[in-house]
Amino acid sequence: MAEATFPLPDLGEGLISARVLEWLVAEGDWVERSTPLVELETTKSAVEIPSPQSGRVTRLHVGEDEELGVGEPLVTFTVADEQAGIVGTVPEEKKPARRVRLTLPED
Amino acid sequence: MFATAADGTKIWYDTAAGPRPVLFVHGFASDSDRTWVRTGWVRAVQDRGHVLVDLRGHGQSGRPASGYSPDGLARDVLSVLDEAGLSEVDAVAYSMGGLVGWELAGLAPGRIGRLALGGIGGAPAGRAELARVQAALSGQGLEACAEGIAGHRIEGTPPCPVLFAAGDSDEVAADAPEFAAALNAPFVSLGRRNHFNAVSGRRFKEAVLDFFER
Image 1 (cartoon, rainbow over the protein chains, first blue to last red):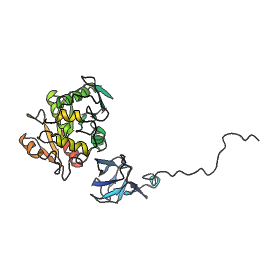
Image 2: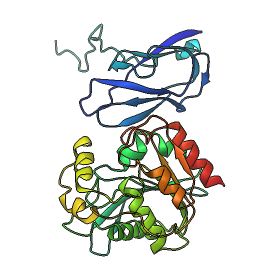
Image 3: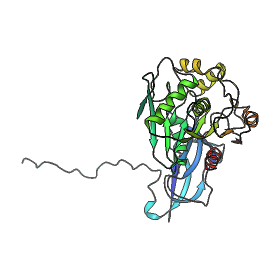
Image 4: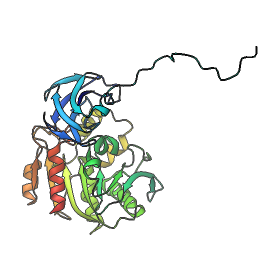
């Protein structure tokens, strides 16, 4: 088993933070992917965020009525090893280690 | 998808088939995406199916200069139900959408089975209040709609079984508990929510779905 942390996603409209209105899961709960996870309030509206994956909730990083910035840890799940790292991390863009020539050299 | 209103205005809608679709009617200065999609409502009714509609002057629908009375807006929604081929739905409506839902249920007997009204009581829609809602939601180009809605209120006896719900801090719907009681309709408190953050609440969804199942 491994842990995967899900950060506050970009909610659009240029907003950089949100307030937790209500957690819809508790630490220790098993949640399925796409089930309601948390309600967040921005300056303009309230939104419900579904769980990005199945797993056991090991830590809620912010309490209700607390403010959180985009990209800061929201919730940590314990997940099966093969799922670890999928959630909340954008794959890094790495430069290719070596170039591959698509045409034959002319020499 | 678009339905065409009697005056030719294009009315945006989206529908998912199901055993008992829920019609969603948003409020002034908002739209279906903000009120019902991002708040998790569509997800909450996925077992039943849904119909979303953007009222004229809002979201992806056309913005003509007239046709914004509760009756006009209700006829737009009726054209969506016709276009979608839905003979009967249950409906959830929020704020100004409640005026539309109420009107629609009276206009088309039998088409709305049960009607859940959030964020609205019995007071007439006031211009100052509409302006405040518009400012809070950054709405634009809504003068004609404000003109068409201002002064209207929920009137008469319930056209079908209705449920009222509002946050305890909802100033727009402050009289909802007493108004519901006067109509002999159930009222559900959405806790310490205000007019703008009550829609997504779990208690609202549970109360409405429970009401629809009765």
